[in-house]
Image (tube, rainbow, N blue to C red):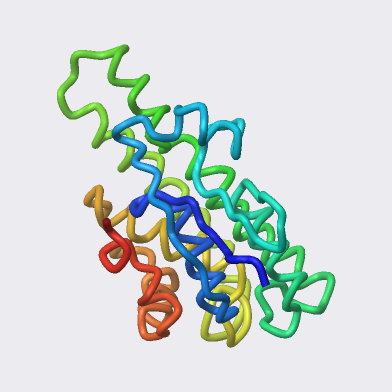
Length: 210
């Protein structure tokens, strides 16, 4: 079997999602660190792998995969028994909706290159922190309400799904930026349950920081 290689940045929430998925599926992989702060994602050799210049990129089965949720869905289809996507079509839609609420609504607005551009447009010293807190809080408030429709130990059901793979890195970012988590009881409870699982522990940024 060809070596599985994950090109990632330790603090990237998109990379964090894929690390959790690989760990849950017990797929051995090698990490190649792409230092976003040093501009490694803009180097020609990396752009040849990933024309968007984003992380993560996963090399698996002789294929080059990009975009974290597309990667996770590939892995879910590779190992359907692991339940990253439920077998029921309605449950799959719900899991995707929860995952997309993070990955497509909160994450893009709070991405590094977006906030870097924001800081070129203002002299306000605390603009970055205010921006992050505003959009993360607003997004988590909506996510809390969405998750509240479903039962189970995790975002949907009693085993982790793609929704939880998106939730946990977003909670990490929320705490990093000092977001008040008091009102997000279901989110905090799910995050705590995930934190007890070895696959999530091994994927934590503090465990993979170069």
